[in-house]
Amino acid sequence: MYTLIISVACSVAVSVLLKIARRQNIQIEQAIAVNYVVAASLCLLILRPQPAALLSPTTPWWVLIALGVLLPSIFLAMAGAVRHAGIVLSDAAQRLSLFIPLIAAFVLFGEALSASKAAGIALALVALACLLARKRQPDSTGDARRGAALLLLVWLGYGTIDILFKQLAKSGAAFSSSLFVAFALAGVLIFLYLLAKRSVWTRRNVVAGAVLGLLNFGNIYFYIRAHQVFPQNPTLVFSAMNIGVISLGTLVGAGFFKEKLSWVNALGIALAITAIVVLIPK
Image 1 (cartoon, rainbow, N blue to C red):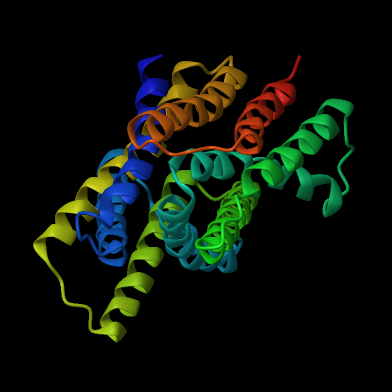
Image 2: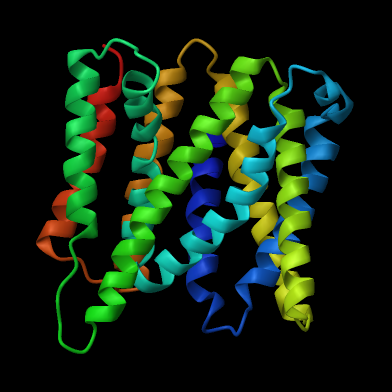
């Protein structure tokens, strides 16, 4: 069970680091770039990928390239969402993205829609609407709209990334190799972006990026280990991970950072957890 606890803690810790980045004068683009160097290095050392295996003609390189573009882009969107909307709503929006592959499955790929999946998707969409509902105040209308837009982008972005990884799995590509190449491509692209910007590097940003990379990889690695520890009960891992992140994110955001939630936002958190529970196979 410790693998799940560590994975949940790492996921929420990423949001915490993104939350405090601005007040600590951390340039988040540089931190995210270093994060991918660290994550790719750890992937290479621990998961032992075989990138050469991806040279097969069946490898969908367009998926890997799309991941290379989306991973840093949505990471930046997540940082913006945490800053403008807070940890609670951002973590919930990210976890609700798991319903996007379900929607795509029956809309795009013609899979049968069961009653439980339909109920889960309906609850998830209502939950998302509640999370996006922001208090309209004369002096913060623009910021509220920006926060809602970033939350929606986080939901769509992480859902799309999930679909792309599933497409890679269907192609037969090894997960560890695909993950390493995706991290490497993401790192190259964001470093090129920073080079074009002539970004001035600081030690503070590099250290923050190294910590971010450890947490980001830790979240993925211990989630994989949890599935290996509970091979006969993937439902436990799936539900505990998503509900755990939403619950811990709520405790940290509302408790430690004093993030204020409207009753509609709180209802969205409750509906998000309910949607995940409904999705669990009976």
